[in-house]
Length: 117
Image: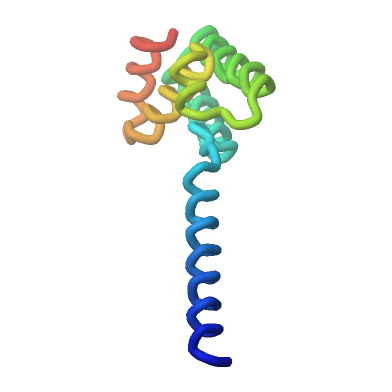
């Protein structure tokens, strides 16, 4: 392999890396993952089991999650743009962020009542 071939091969590699970087950057990222939804539902059930939220409060919160799944069916990827435009998606995104950010269950339960019930 001569110098010109070597330089061409390096250039081709750089172009391919750039393409992959661009693909990763342009691939829509979900605002809420399946793992986050599962963790949220598990935490809501735990709050209910420990009587920090009532049956009726749990039902309202479950309705929000169900509404999210209905909205999710309309989009290939539920992105931040979708969360900003769709209230059902936006509510669940906020629920997930709150759940991940508030460690204490009594505080979380109070915030759920204040913001979502």
